[in-house]
Image (cartoon, rainbow, N blue to C red):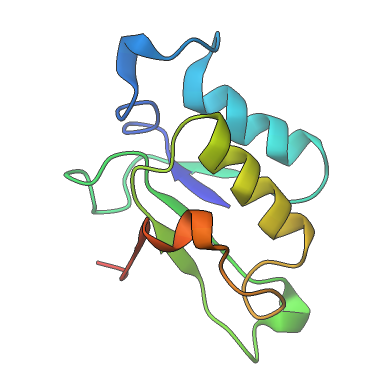
Length: 107
C-alpha cells in the first residue's frame, strides 16, 4: 500500500476516535504482514484526502495494476481494505463492495 503522509487522516480529522487516526489503521494492516506500507509526501491527489494505492503482489502484476482509493478512512473501510489485501488484493480478489464507491482513477 502507498499512503500520502500529508493527507492521511483528513477525512475524519480530529473526530477520529482512534489514537493515531487513519495512519494507525494502515500501519496496523502493514504490521499484520498482509501488506507492505510506503508513506510518500504526495500522490498528486491532495483534494481527495485519505488516498490509498494498493499495488498487486509481484505474481499478480501481469494481471492487474494498482488500485486507487479516496477518502478511505475509519474502521469499516479499513477493515474491508485489510480483508481484501489478505485475500490477495488487485488481480487476485475483486474489489469488495464496501470499497467500490471509494475507488478512483489514478491522477
